[in-house]
Length: 384
Image 1 (cartoon, one colour):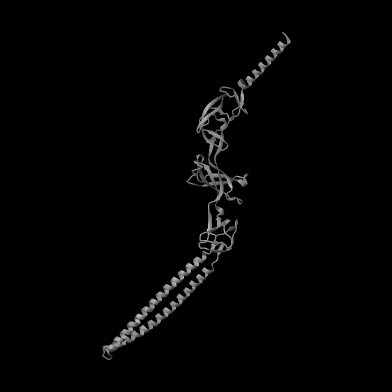
Image 2 (image 1 turned 45 degrees about the vertical axis):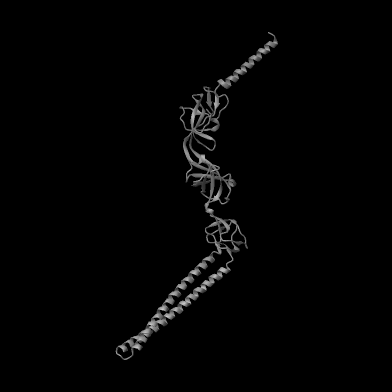
């Protein structure tokens, strides 16, 4: 045999050996695979994006128009209920209050005068009645004339009329006092409108007017929030929001505190969804409101809807023909690879799905799909 022929034979044998080794490794030799393991107490979370907002927000202003002459609060100030925030020029209204108070004094003086008139009329009536009684006795005894008796009776009747008129003047004076006091209360209440006070313990988030501004009735001067009503308003896809209930625990991640998860809970699920984005609005209350939370700041919300006591979870990449309810997975059964159709349950935020259908005893589900997989091929679970 020539040398070249010998070299060719050796090369063919080497190639055949390499091919045999490759076939052994890829087809005949057991392959190592990663498999899923049963997990306990697995939380099922729903994710949503939103912003930090305040449940109680108020734009406050005056009920009357006028010139702004005092401002006592600025953005960021925390103020107690009843604190004076601003005032408008009230000199004209103050004069109206003084005028109505003077009206009360005048009405009271008129009442005193009317009561004195009653006393005078009552005395005249008593005197005329006494005279009339004597005149009537004399005329009965024919000591005086009938005309004299009639005059005495007329005088008594006139005195009684004067008394009743004086008493009516007292009632009129009393009514005038009541009216004057009502007018005074009205003008005093109106004067209060010239002072703007905080309706509750609040924080100022906006000052909308400055000194010297002419403002109209109802025009806002400040925007206030109740700092204890700060929450996260999250938008959650309708397809994921169905299991959320009021009272469920949640975690909030603020953009400014991305390293920290703040505890909270669901306190409101709005009954109307966003028709364009097909999202549901969920309000999450902080267990402890962070001191540096800013309104409008982006927030990530994770709501825990339930826990799975036991769960077999596989990544989406390990599921073939994935549909809404199921797919196919590779399994390791008695040292051999198999394919199984499975029913899927919850999808976790990390992309893993819960397998809810029953599998054969000792079947393990592959979590990664390396090359060379075929039904019946020998395999060994990594770590075994």
